[in-house]
Length: 312
Image 1 (tube, rainbow, N blue to C red):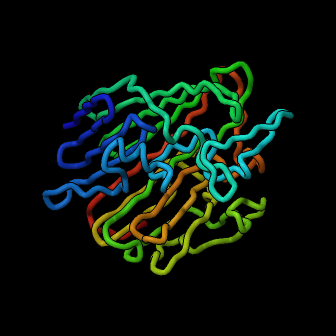
Image 2 (image 1 turned 60 degrees about the vertical axis):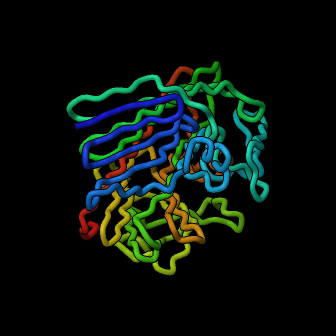
Image 3 (image 1 turned 180 degrees about the vertical axis):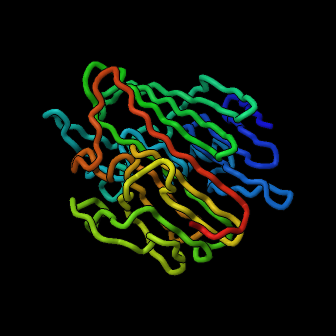
């Protein structure tokens, strides 16, 4: 049995004794993804205590943030598009703009419902343009909870009168309980982007087979952008596994990159599906030019199970 409810700030999608999901209208943030385990809920998302907590602390870790219209870092907040120079300085760290413009946007619920097969909720925000990014667009985010897990579909439509530069991504932090040193990770990737000292791509790639097969995170240091191998929706982009839980992430081919970040606390792992590389507005790696009136779709599915099983 599925249920979908909402108030002014929260949405809940529920599958009886299977999954429980909470979404904030602030940022369209997924704040909870819990699985029923031993007569209790286990939440695999590192989220926030409340919508107000998210508003106050979103820029600390950018946990669960929507990365739009660019992901990760934008060198010095500057880029050129169609011969015009632009400067974005909404949030700067180490001299670079971070994580786009919509991580703190207020979204409106435009649809919500259930049927025998699942529950869903759609959120919408119309971005009107700014001095640093003068390109209006509409973003629709549809969350669907069903027997296959939690799917998140993002549709971006150019509502302006000129083409716009675009990339899309998410910034969720996942935990499977305890310390990351006790988890294993597998990535459908054998290469990563080479970064410079400021964590910006150089344009080269490096062979990296560390997680091509399930491997322990014990002692690992990770802040890397991996290039998926032959991205396909029916193959997990990555699998995170512990003694009790397994999380499979299935991403569409429009997300060819996965940024993996293990924070110093080692209490969670950021697994960020990206359509474009960090600084893609400058280096062009995955940058999309979206014509006026056109829509681009991005989808990702999270499948969290509690059965202790070996990752494949």
